[in-house]
Amino acid sequence: MSQLKKEAAAVKSPIEGVTAAKTDFVSFLYASHGKTYDEYVAKAEETTGLKRENLSYVLYGLLAFYLIFGSAAKLLCNLIGFGYPAYASVKAIRSVDKKDDTQWLTYWTVFATISLFDFFSQDIYRFFPFIYVFKAVFLVYLYLPQTHGTAVFYTKIVDPLVTRIDNFFGTGAKQ
Image (cartoon, rainbow, N blue to C red):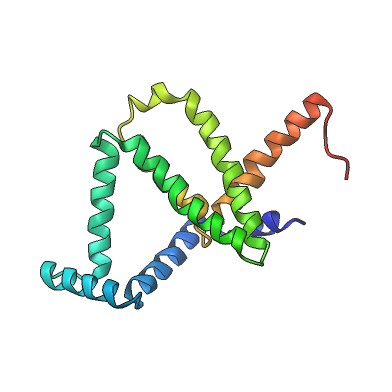
């Protein structure tokens, strides 16, 4: 069984992955990330009277508001799906471990598939103002290591789709 199928099979529920991601995120927020970060975050907490976790929720709320009403919502949504994954992909290429290369190659395959369908659904976006919020959340779900979203989407959607295309054209891989 391939590593992707193992990851997809290991996923009990998306909720468990999101819960793990939240726990890791809170740990990240409270960890030290250098003097400058620590000073700015402490100043923001002092100024607003909010803990850094609550400050992050306010920022997410503003981001969601902009994804609904902002003029560049599509661009921002695509940056969410492209920015961090591109950075992580470069880091994976630089690393010796090839497992992360497979993870990010799979992400880009899934991202390309979604982008292809996205192109044909532009008219739908006009009627659903929340669509970019949902798309951004889905893209984050895909690339979070805690959720294994890419592995699930790839094994359930992309791989069977490519297999059907291969079978249709008679170009199926011989193993």
